Image 1: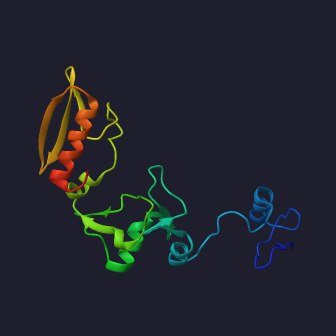
Image 2 (image 1 turned 135 degrees about the horizontal axis):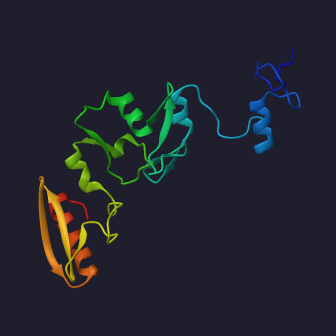
Image 3 (image 1 turned 30 degrees about the vertical axis):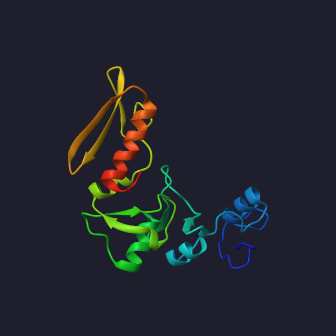
Length: 184
């Protein structure tokens, strides 16, 4: 019976260049049978080996979802890495809470930058406009021939405007977010 020639591999079966299909494919793609992203059997090892410090942030260098949030496989399930890190330190996240990145960096898993909030508390921390925004500017909407600013404060929609230019509306939106939420 043929056994893979790569040290530590005990796979048997059909071999190419004396390697199992996994190591052969890595050799073809990377020029090295051990090439590619390393696989970690322990999630803590993955967290330890897949981060780099950028300023005060600990940036996840592994897989991210399409929106830029870090994910990893734990027990056959893809989970958010910042949630894993939080739960390892503080226990489960309550159902009525979510984790906010105070640094606004979705890939950051630094516990000092994470905090629990309700959805309504977390929403103002969003960066940029909603994906369906027609203006592409957060909290700015076209209203008639002008522009208006809308913020949701304590479940209540508040409007300011009209403004003649989109730049005026953008500045007002920033001022109002600072006034109500403490962030521009």
